[in-house]
Length: 220
Image 1 (cartoon, one colour):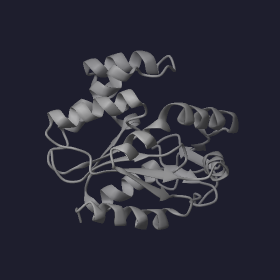
Image 2 (cartoon, rainbow, N blue to C red):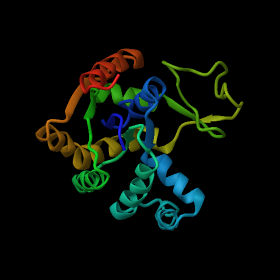
Image 3 (cartoon, rainbow, N blue to C red):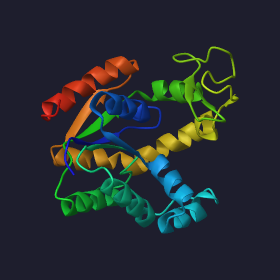
Image 4 (tube, helix red, strand yellow):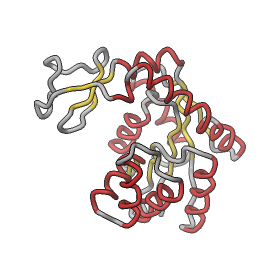
């Protein structure tokens, strides 16, 4: 594999998926989202997908070894174009597994982008988010509302608030991030890869900062 290889870290609501999509559009990098990779493996009926499905159907976390295996399969398909990892790694153990994977592919990470957003902004972003029940498109009632209230602009599907975006669940998700993922900030800082970004502004302002980082690691 070649190209620029990135990891995007940040708490729920920081805009990891949005930034990954903008990086893909600007630089053509493959976006590897944990959720998408898991759903794709389940849909294809791979061995790892079947294992993951058993946990997902019960609403349980998919074990590290299964997630790592699915990420490994996805990384093998990125060829020489580079990638952006969104949602992986989430733990120190996953980060160490990623290091091994990349070493085996004779490649490495170029930067780990850490999106920093104040807690009150995260809660406001998440609680006002809505998703289409048909095509999955994400809206925000303040920043990116649909043309018609409760209706998806793209397919006409009904918009709903995911359980993940309800206030009580948001607090749980933020605590989980603090407990499990925040240590990755120190892990990658010690490796000299961490690039922290103020992501409390709008998407364009945040992306401008990301472009500076990508340029600084030598890949335009």
